[in-house]
Image (cartoon, rainbow, N blue to C red; front, side, top):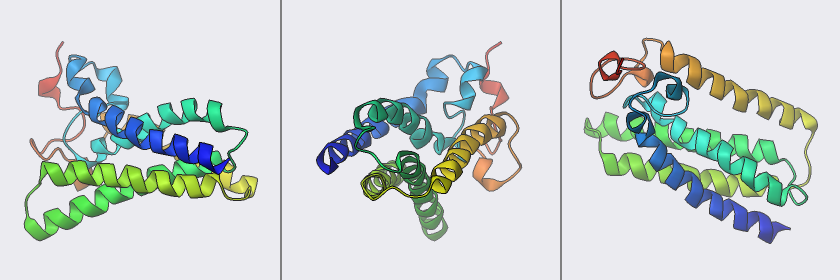
Length: 182
């Protein structure tokens, strides 16, 4: 059981990192089609980059669950915690190093994404292979996981005027209108 789950969690690292990297460019490749903004990053803000682990993790989880459902306990909890760890890692590293050095470094941003996914998948493995926990955890996890999807959609189109939503290249928020083709 544990070996099968470990195998899938390792595949998940590769899948999430590669698809997340691809997703970074999909809004531009779609010719800036607004409806896709809910899924793909629409600017260079920290918030938009948090979509990179979210949607690929959902896609992978749907595939993975079909193969490990008999061996998996606490699946949705493991995936929710995996996502929370990934985005926390991205934000902690980004805000720490930019506060210390005053510059953004692409390589550090990429490595924080990869590191967050790796740590998240390791913790997901531990949670999924532990004894079954109360349904309260699963229900709460569903609310959190779905809530983030809703927030990504809403805040892409109606972002608050907060630093996490500000495009680091333009200083603007949300879908940057001069990129939109009519």
